[in-house]
Length: 87
Image (tube, rainbow, N blue to C red; front, side):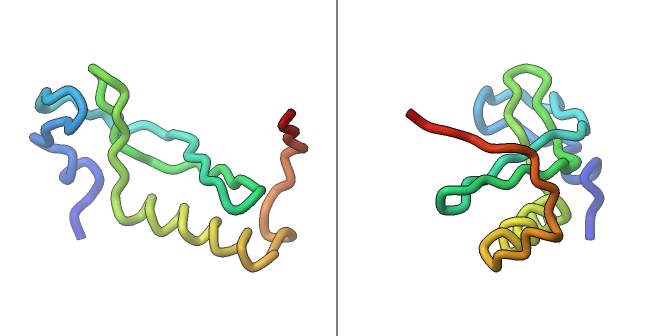
């Protein structure tokens, strides 16, 4: 399996069209699951020109595992970060 850095090498950004603009950063990815959300910190490529984020398979699996825990009601395996309200 290729590393994130190898995946980003020479990659053209699908949003702005520039090449070789991705850098590896830790990002927070938030996914809505029914009425709840789960936020996961993952390593991703971020375009230095437009901010587009590129996820590798490790990040995708990490996000999916958190979503699966939330869907299964495994709240004890997740950190409760507060409440959100919508008016």
